[in-house]
Length: 220
Image (cartoon, rainbow, N blue to C red; front, side):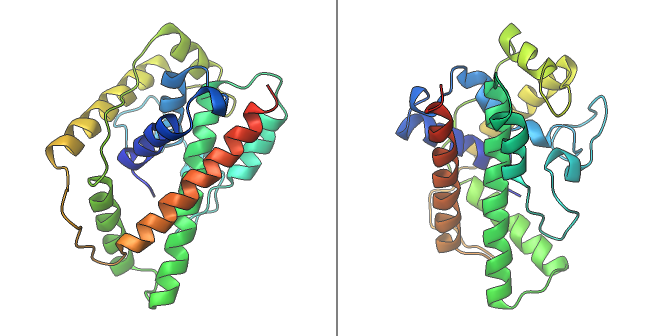
């Protein structure tokens, strides 16, 4: 559910507050693209990719109204069991962990306020997430280099082709530009969710990713 401006903001906060070395990140560029990678082949972020992969496969999630990606399963298979883990893979795990936390918070919030799955919930939460994303200051855009393409070609779950990497970078650049042009500085007027909701979800997502990456860095 978090859009790429939210994922990018999480990466920038990790680097700013924790630092790459403390989190076991060697290639910040690959880690940044990894935080976008699970969405590349789903079909709604990057147009005209070489092929499509269903969301339930890219995110290890059940097909539900608000799915919960199984980031722990991804970690167990693609991080814990591997002798070498790429920064792209660490970024993909961070993406899935953030998605899980935000979606779990959304489920709980909608149940508490009595909003049932349906059109109102879909339109309201999508609009609110889009608005929240525009409150965030972001500047990082991944760039294509040999190291990134090598990690994409060797990505464990599926190969990310160069053509699609370049298209992803173009989309990420446009998102940063749009966030700057449409940046929200006043208190947002959310339709369904709330500022407290986003603060709590953002804090837990950050703490979840920090804990996982610090544990990983301790094994290096």
